[in-house]
Image (cartoon, rainbow, N blue to C red):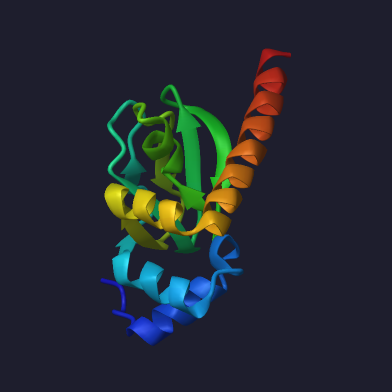
Length: 148
């Protein structure tokens, strides 16, 4: 069971996550209000490929493994990174399975809260877009690697 952070502590934590580092103090307080602390043991499945997206996870500590079609590993995700946003933004089923590769501490943001934050915070929307663009470029290079 994770330690329950006071809102001020959660704001300080959010400020250190690259996705939120340029947000204002007010924005960070708004984000803190809609996040839920959650812990996963190694081996726990956070996201199942093909399921409907209902939340986004921001990794606070630990490492996640991202795989597709059962066992095709796409790589790892670590502290400060986000998983689960693609399904929410595309309104499509989850494109990969995400499993805890170690004990993981994360912040969960529900789908409607996440979309609301993006609508109110253009900087956050821009950072998510850049993250997705980087991920697409990386996914394409991985695809070329696996096909070789």
